[in-house]
Length: 393
Ligand SMILES: *Cc1c(COP(=O)(O)O)cnc(C)c1O
Image 1 (cartoon, protein in one colour):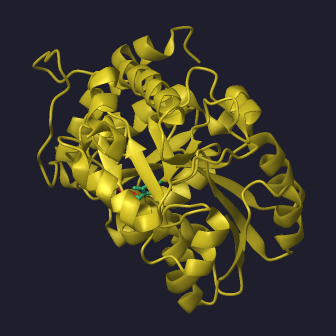
Image 2 (cartoon, protein in one colour):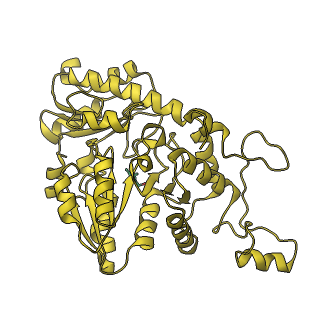
Image 3 (cartoon, helix red, strand yellow):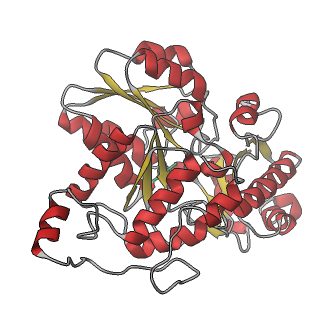
């Protein structure tokens, strides 16, 4: 392990140059690679010799991204995927078979819940959905067939924080793997493998890109063997990361620490400002002292609490939509983790496919608004939000 600080490692380590001595990492847009002889080709295909053969199997730009992200998360092997969802799908295909069982927190990204409940269910895998912070429910849900415990923390969209150490213990006791979607925190703010997670999932589309350009995903494994299994699966099913996207993400990793510090500072400022506004019922931000898991957030995310803030307005969906529409330049979008502040109505967009019952249990209502606080000036962001409040207009 390097003795350098995170930001130095994110820029200087796990990079290499081609014979051109380029200073910024090269983009290798090539689908295949050549060999010096027929024998060498045979050796590479038989895996007697390590070399690139075909970009679905491996590409130098993608490999550099995998190594650097792996290094930052503290894993043994990282495998990149075309999107966050393809990473989670690959996880299921690699580690689950008919008859197996998954325990998943209710407060998860909408598509993740649809995948577990509707897609993998078709292949004879059952899922138990539990409350993120009720450890007893996690423990009781585990059976001899349980292979994966899946949690997202901070969770989408109300920023609940999971107790990773406790979940890792439950996973160990039941012989299952703890999988943590670390999308909202990034390895700069939280490193789940240090707390016993077996596999960390990323949607690189979000903060790893950080500027709303490319789509990607990644799986970082504590054990190299798990990483090898995922690698073999992904290269066969083909939902691997494109070299161009990997090149974008590599440049983005260089600014990850800087961006996450600014996102965290801005989000805390906005959250504290929101608390004081009339017409707001409740503000959800792990950095606020009245957040139910503030103590856990401080333990797992000592450097900052991330850029996501949610809040409930008084007056239900009508009031929430009106607030969103009155903002002048905040982007109305479903994405997150962008330099641009994004305002979202989860109930009717990102979580529209989640059942009303689950939404009620998760605490999402028509009154809920999610903010992905960007890198603009925090006071300007508040000023634009202020236009959303009738008293301000
Ligand atoms: C966006 C997101 C995903 C899915 O990632 P894609 O790149 O959109 O496929 C998974 N988990 C979380 C927490 C996300 O925000």
